[in-house]
Image 1 (cartoon, rainbow, N blue to C red):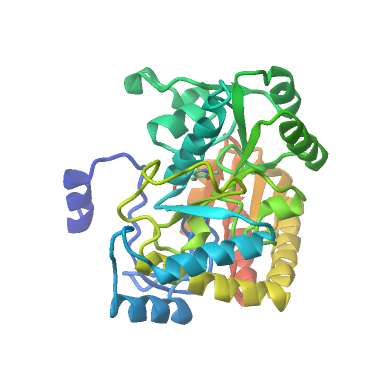
Image 2: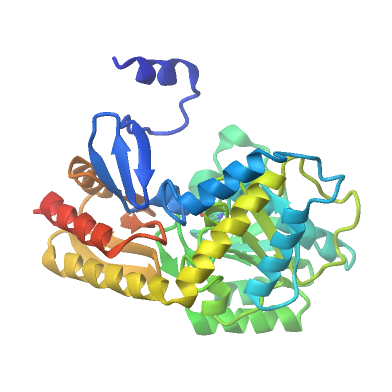
Length: 388
Ligand SMILES: Cc1ncc(COP(=O)(O)O)c(C=O)c1O
């Protein structure tokens, strides 16, 4: 057995079903293995590497920051963090305060604490989430995740105060005087790349506003230009009470963020994180936003999304025995499959394309937002070969 595979299997707790291809470096949406092979990356590390692998602007920003200050605790002023918070609020287009965490689950934990503190003052602390949702792997976010398969007995007891419902209509029906917040993903990512209906989401936003219930939108996967705009909430034309971000915000460094309209709920001592929003990740996120904002403004993002999606539609049409329909928004795409997705991913991998699974039956694509047309062409050429 390969020495590193052996080390991994002996010393790393085996919680992932790992593929043992070993990548050494990358350039934009192309990854290179230690065997000298090149792969087209249609996953960006599950929606993380938003500006591509080996991005020179980002790596320069990280290098410069590393040479100055990597970390000083959150007990001192951190200029990049302050600038980043303002930038997030500006890009969202409404006045928001930000708490910085280190991951999506942690950002969601922060959002849950925020909603509970807001609600408990009014005698309510219950959070409603949707069936098929995914909000993370910590004990609270696992419980918030609306899939029974995650609520396994091994991890009991879970924390109280959550329930999940089939859809938005049911959320509106079930919400009562005990409901502090309703938490949704606008496109259920892990659940199968399923966008929620826009009118229903807007109805929910209005309902929450009228009933003093906080609308929490988990944009850990949909946020930071993944769906073509800075926030998917902008695509849906809503202004949620709380928005969480992570994944693409750092372009590969770990950062999470809780954005809220309600700047006065948390006060000193209510929440904290040793690493959250440290110098390095804040500087990196500012650089990521510079790159992505430019791609958004000069329409490259929109153009490449259209290009990718037309290729995806062609693939679906070309293989009617394998595929049913494509779904998703922007660069968050899936294909509902007739065949076992695991096998399709394996075939793609054999032909040097990385793809993902979502839900039970969806082949999922989350390419770097910076992917070039040549890489899109090459990736789909290889997929056609893989599925022929
Ligand atoms: C919508 C959503 N929320 C939360 C998470 C958890 O994020 P993390 O793995 O960074 O904790 C994910 C991860 O896939 C996600 O897609």
